[in-house]
Length: 232
Length: 101
Image 1: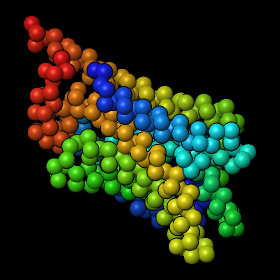
Image 2 (image 1 turned 45 degrees about the vertical axis):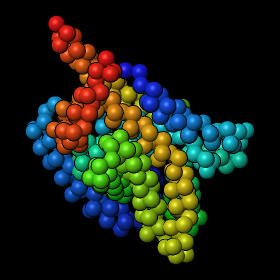
Image 3 (image 1 turned 90 degrees about the horizontal axis):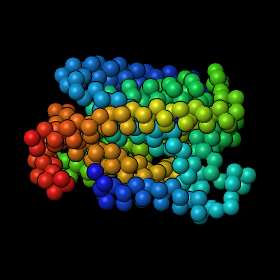
Image 4 (image 1 turned 90 degrees about the vertical axis):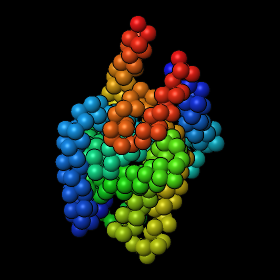
């Protein structure tokens, strides 16, 4: 999903920066508010960022024969909301732009928009929606992470098609979707599975924090506690 | 803490990662396989005649250095997750002992 340094005309770079900056700024305010209200959620914020660090460094092969990486943005989006996740994504993307020549400073705004805004917003909405219809948290986090990952890549394909509608937007979109979105399908599933595993560990160990962050309701906590004697 | 469901999920992840290597066994970068999708997009853009107007201010000088930095990135993440979850697990087992007393 990294648009490489210099590969967007400057007008587009500017536009995506203008979209990304207010969200990241709001995310910084949200982090301050959440950590003031729930200081015990700070370690989970670090875990969400760390999860993104790991997943976005793993370039996995896909059945299409090319390689790509998961994004890790679903976990942070579900735990802390999309704005906070945009800040975490910005940190990861700056690290990769400066040290790895992956993505770039000119395309940072565009890359934050895909990995830090569209993906997390989708993940957050999917999780809320699945909880609302009464399915379990684990099912919710699976689809949230899967779609957060996949829609990040669809967004990148859209951004490139808008900047390079050659010969037309439609044809360019098909071309970039083949490059990004097809490759990403199995990797998005893998990301969904990995996110379920880490989320369930967190839910088992510290359901109290998740409840304070309103990620799970009190009925989920009761379920965990009911199960506890079996585990012991 | 051993959880069969998690082992199955992690095994599925491993299968998803290994399957392409089996399907395209014997093929490599020279045949156009296992390149990065980011680079493929870059090439597709260059085919339209576009010239990048800015290049990275610093690039890892070799593949070795790049893999060093990627490993560093993953290690930073892994240390943080291991530390926090390990701390929580310790807390959890202490809590269990206290309630036994």
